[in-house]
Length: 303
Image (spheres, rainbow, N blue to C red):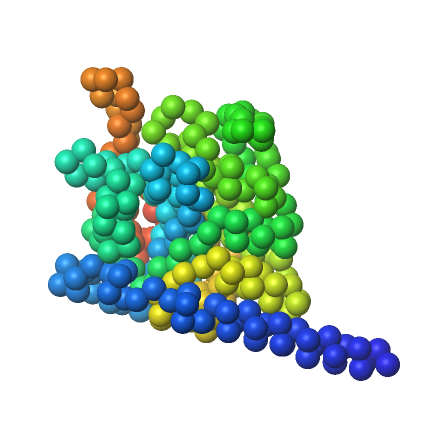
């Protein structure tokens, strides 16, 4: 009887996983390449590395500008698959002519977002994924709480966070990653987004999803319920990326913020620029063989 129950449970798990895969791969979830990528002649050459540009979107009306509170992160796995770098980008970073990353994203959409990432990081974006923050919250609840560190105590609406470790769930993940705790043009918010991404990756790695098909199917279903992605990012390709991350040790995955500098403008507002000294070295590391050493160094500096 026990064996029969186990077999029935396994069959049910496979059905659930099949349903989740079908939802993820459904044509309604696919963003056409023509609406994602910039012209081919301005893009870096394709390599055997895998690079995913993730955007976690905030509900309309939560921010004064649509992209300002969104999470933008580049997940890069080199061809050697012996390391992974996750880079959180501050949307308030100025790109050109006084326009910020967020403003350009609002105006030009995915092709501009991809073009900026590829130009400043020097690597080709292979996949894009746009995930609704509410779907992310459901994933968090399935995995359990996410312990994240905040450098400062702050409140947003009715939600309060302490200086130190905070435990996020579906109701607080979006608040923690979109609020501006300090008037610093999103620097603290981007660090909070980095902390949430770091905790999420750890939870996905240590959550036993490969050993628990029911849990794995539920997590994939939550992702699928709020995601849009490029056509090449099938569940098969997603599985390859996830497997690469799962096989790495914790210190072989570096989650950092893209290096920036801040300054005060004449009107006393804070202006954020990509760090002109650090960015060339970061770009070289992503394209070369010293990626692990460089990104471990960034982690040690608090990026």
